[in-house]
Length: 225
Image 1 (cartoon, helix red, strand yellow):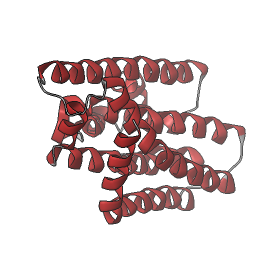
Image 2 (cartoon, rainbow, N blue to C red; image 1 turned 45 degrees about the vertical axis):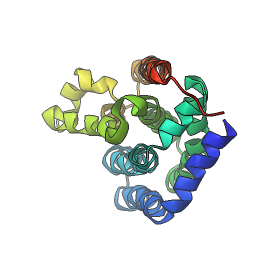
Image 3 (tube, rainbow, N blue to C red; image 1 turned 60 degrees about the vertical axis):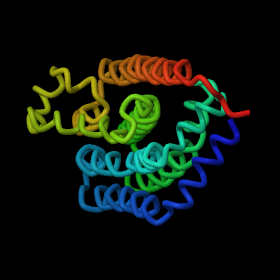
């Protein structure tokens, strides 16, 4: 697994400029959200949604490059098991995401430290982690299209301006939809929906990624020693 982490870190160093630009842009979007909106709920909704979309391009850039350069083939041929390949990539991106969330927490608390803001902040952190795991787990299936999960945000165009309709639509089970709904009052039922949908979706995505990799490994007759 260490070799998997090292390979992903090498790509991150190679793509340092692009990844840094995405990281800084996400923080700027979130910072502007709190500066331009007195209501923290609005800051977490639209600006937070944009920041979430941008920061998730960090794993997308690395994973797409990994597949374009066929690095994943060496992972399979080297005999790494599916769960090690997936876990190694999760471990690689987690510190970056945690750093983003740490800065976001500081920005949020400096602007508004009310219990409602803390609740929204917890939900936002869950959505960020869910988004990162979704991209990593589904990357073996989408390969060069690892950005595909990000475009679930386009579903918001259906009824994104009507929060009441959005809260009762299937879009409310998606991470981006739930992020947009942070502008509303946070209820216990909404928190349960966020947690349950995150756990269920990540479990399904992991199984998809696991069995996709397992099938590729089964088709590989020769492994590197």
